[in-house]
Image 1 (spheres, rainbow, N blue to C red):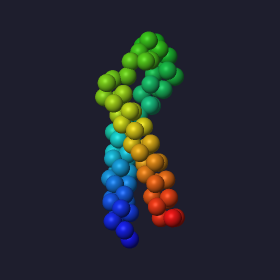
Image 2: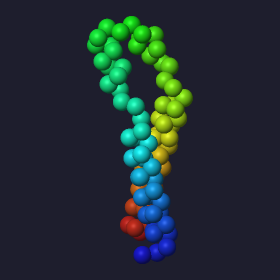
Image 3: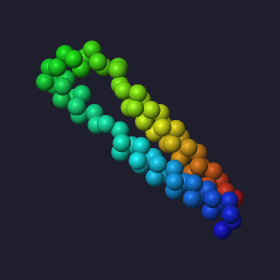
Image 4: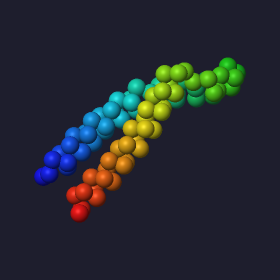
Length: 81
């Protein structure tokens, strides 16, 4: 197994662990849903006001998932060649 495959495999493992952590740290959507079902008017007005932490976690999740996908394709191209 060449050194590049080992490095990319370790990087893939780290990115996958980071992606798992980023997804698990995001708040659940059930709080907003239960407020909407119960008739809470405050959920309508506070709809687009997610916290900075929530937005950052969302961006991190998207970036890590794109990196995960690209790294999988690169590893497949290296191993298949």
